[in-house]
Image 1 (cartoon, rainbow, N blue to C red):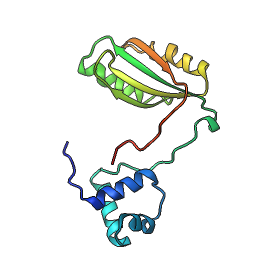
Image 2 (cartoon, rainbow, N blue to C red):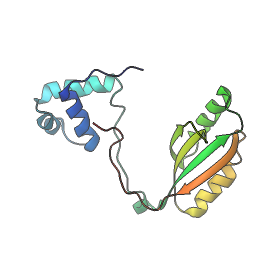
Image 3 (tube, helix red, strand yellow):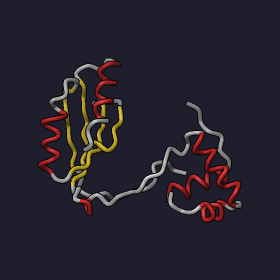
Length: 155
């Protein structure tokens, strides 16, 4: 993996898009201090390079009936490459798991889960996570409230 060589304008474009990915190219160009055609070329170049991975809408989970956010720290029985890959692949099948990281330390994976309620989350932990052949330990952390929400990269 390489670190992209980006100039100040590219960084402004990324910062603005991370804050609001729905703005028009004209508005983005104005915020970046350039005209629209070169702005669009730069955005396309950033997309083609994989620096901009995609665009998405941020949803208000509680308004859709998803009231519980939790994190699961999962330890595997064996940390062989095959087991790590198998568990990582399994996380892709679990809709309740919204993000997953392979981590170092006391656990092997950190899962960010969003569920309708505590019962659904408990069912997932008992019937899916602990039932997985690779899993040795599961530690859960229920959230109280989110206190910070910003873009994933500091620019």
